[in-house]
Length: 148
Image 1 (cartoon, rainbow, N blue to C red):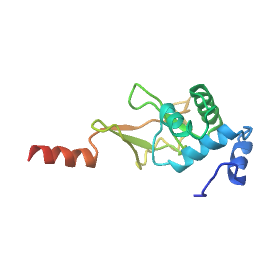
Image 2 (image 1 turned 90 degrees about the vertical axis):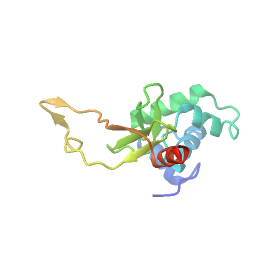
Image 3 (image 1 turned 60 degrees about the horizontal axis):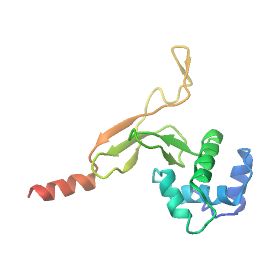
Image 4 (image 1 turned 45 degrees about the vertical axis):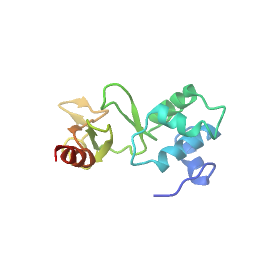
């Protein structure tokens, strides 16, 4: 994966190719998402992490930017928790594991025979979501220590 920094040619090219003007806020937000690819970020997390560097940044700007990225196919959104939308830089179909202990969301590489199809029974597939819920390794280890 290319290391993307704000205002880099690669980042500008990505936004431009997706039909988005490469504004400073968009560049900073997409860079932050790229640097945290393994995480599934909330609007609040992105805002809190970037607002110190960009005092004029607002929550509305982050929401609007992420919605633009979502429509352009730059990010994916999941609502696995039922209470919040999380955004990720990986847009290819993949499954997720939600830890009920710590709240972490982990990408899971599971081959789904339907994921590569564009339709099923004459219906157009637009999104595919696969979720697993339980306890992650860290929480299981913590739980075992508490029992001993």
